[in-house]
Length: 216
Image (cartoon, rainbow, N blue to C red; front, side, top):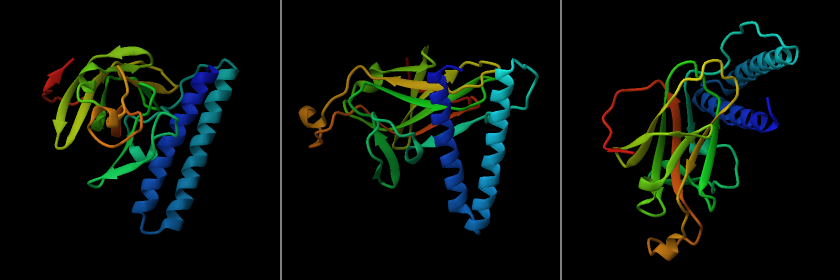
């Protein structure tokens, strides 16, 4: 595994484990007991990862149990720290983060790719009205065709993620905007930051049959 892929893997592992165990602790009736259980589960996963890496170094290719989850949901509060995402914000009870000056924003996800998946990105707002029609979506550098649909007050980007059997490293989902803007210069608000798209959640899971309103 290359250094860049190792970095993506560790970043994805950090944000997914942080979200998973944070939610378990918040929902737990006995936080201390849940903490002990979570630490035990984390230690077990680390041992499995170490075993896989050791086998790869020795050139062993025997079958191992699936390590990656069948689906992943990341919310804005657990997006991995990166320079191109602004601080967490909340509007009408919904958490989100604005992307920054760089027109590209990346999310590294650890998800099983043995079968076809669906990517759903929840968008709260865009800094310029036509950005949604002109953006591009990628998975590991490969262009994904996507559609958009309205889900209440949220606009969703929906794309099919092709299968890649045996993939062990992180899948890099990238959103590429045509530009970023300052809302104050657009006359849409007094915000002086260079912004692109406000994202509240990203989900990768089994494809679902739905009707899309707009296609690209």
